[in-house]
Amino acid sequence: MSEALDDLLDLLDLERIEVDIFRGQSRPTLVPRVFGGQVAAQALVAAGRTVPADRYAHSLHAYFLVAGDPGAPIVYRVDRIRDGRSFTTRRVVAIQHGQPIFHLSCSFQVYEEGLDHQAPMPPAPDPESLPSAPEALPRYTEAVGGPEVVRKLLEAREAVDLRYVDAPPYATAGQPREPRSQVWFRTNGKLAGDDPLLHVCLATYVSDMTLLDSVLLAHGRGGWVTGDIVGASLDHAMWFHRPFRADEWLLYDQESPSSSGGRGLGQARIYTQDGRLAISVIQEGLMRVPRER
Image 1 (cartoon, rainbow, N blue to C red):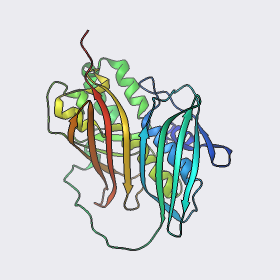
Image 2 (cartoon, rainbow, N blue to C red):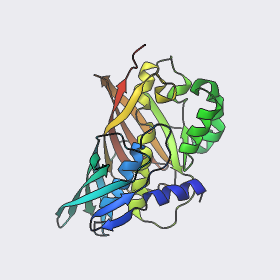
Image 3 (cartoon, helix red, strand yellow):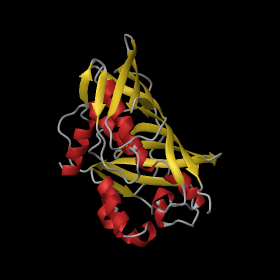
């Protein structure tokens, strides 16, 4: 296991400070706010720690309310909305400086058999044939604004082996492309044990990294990296269909059906390498064009 992955696991290992109240820390980010995927993953950890062990996360719906302060701890308060025979529902509010910054509703289910079908996995190259981030990012040094930005990008994603199928938005800014993007990802190291909640929370963490890329591609924008868009996650929803491991390759197939009103919508499916549809994801994000001075 890499040191960066070990640090990420520590980040997700929340401190219990009271019944149904947890505290989490943050890690340095590339922008002066808490990374949205971190808050969502930590909130799901908090919810999961109040749920019976025989129930598995099957969906979450979240709103990002206020930009989080990376220099302050985050308190997660869990409300036990319902404990039924098959389903358990939890609501989590993340609080900083006395104010809510994030709201999550999530549901857990006892495993059961049922009807089974899925959308087929789209074509994608083998992940091992693609360059890793340390191999690919230096190629875009000029596009992103210099070696210091490259270093910060690599450091921010060091816990995850994330490989773009095609060039990322910041590499082709100024050149509109089809609003579709694919990345392969897995944790940068093997995980001990088979705790399904850990794998779901790690996928939740990664899911906020690239989902809005497809919106940027449609307009030839590089995003926050190049400074031609002011963006932030607004809401996020995930459905967990089938078991998976976050330390094995997952294909994140992303597209954007619409952007308007200063917002962009991204939707995606996450497949295991052997073709099973594991997760569906939808996110809307703020997409403001900076005003010229």
